[in-house]
Image 1 (tube, rainbow, N blue to C red):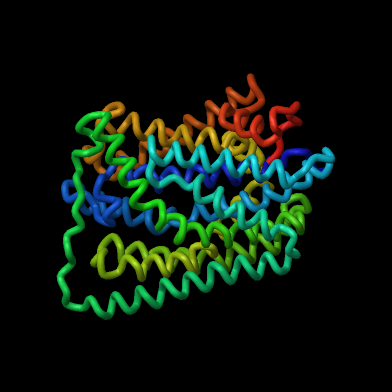
Image 2: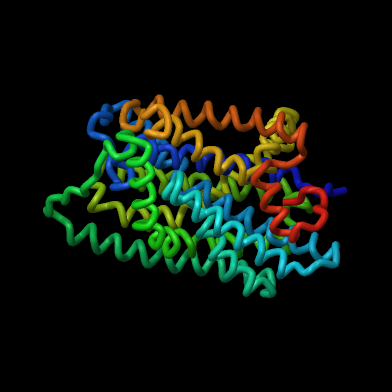
Length: 386
């Protein structure tokens, strides 16, 4: 029997949140990250090894899992609306508008790399095409990722070949802007948001939409409710992880130890095409582990943070801003890579613990409460669903 909430879905979403934090933290901790560089004061062998590991294991992998689960949850929410004899279309429109507003505020005030605004826009496309069959959604999702990845790869190969022997140009950055004053930190973040929002929407947007469609197809097939076979999960992990990790290591080598300007687009193309394999491998391996005694306990530990994923995603930015910018401790550019990665781990574990405590008392996260109030139009809200 399947419960109203799928604990494994929540646990996977929590796992994705941890990976997203490990990627996003560098935009706060190292002001050179936006320019595709590494702080020259922290380029020791140990620093580069940490950045290499983060690029190979985390970059562009976990937001894909989060996007897949967004598409999967779309199906669950639609079913909930049908069961309540409510207008699923109206609920979804209100939800996406709320995400757009939250994303805009989050991007301007806290983190220019916000994904909520992009999700809201791609969600409108998903909503407009939601009636497609599961097989068509799977094909559309795969095609979006494959075509965009192939295009980026070709462009990257051309740039890499054309840049042979050409010295890299210097990308202007102002490392002190985040720590000079709260006003300066706000202005720097807001400026970066308005400069990068179009590229985020038009590059990450189609990739997210592709994963939405794959999640939609999986939700229609109820693959998590029906419990995927051990053979399917083992095969997916055995195929996806070696290929994804190999490509991820190559991509990370190009950006960490190679000429970042020359190879960044090529690395992005490689990542676009292969990251879904690594993501699927991660998810399959975790789902297999959830079937063990220790895995059941881990799933229970992870799930609460996934139930309040929106709150935790926004709080990650609040915490990072307080630690690294002039909103708080002003540690941007001050810490070695190992310390930054350690902070990400500590913050995520703290979120896991706090989420469990908060949900035991309130049953819902504050951002989720607000989003559900808007989604249901102020009417009495049902029990929390994915």
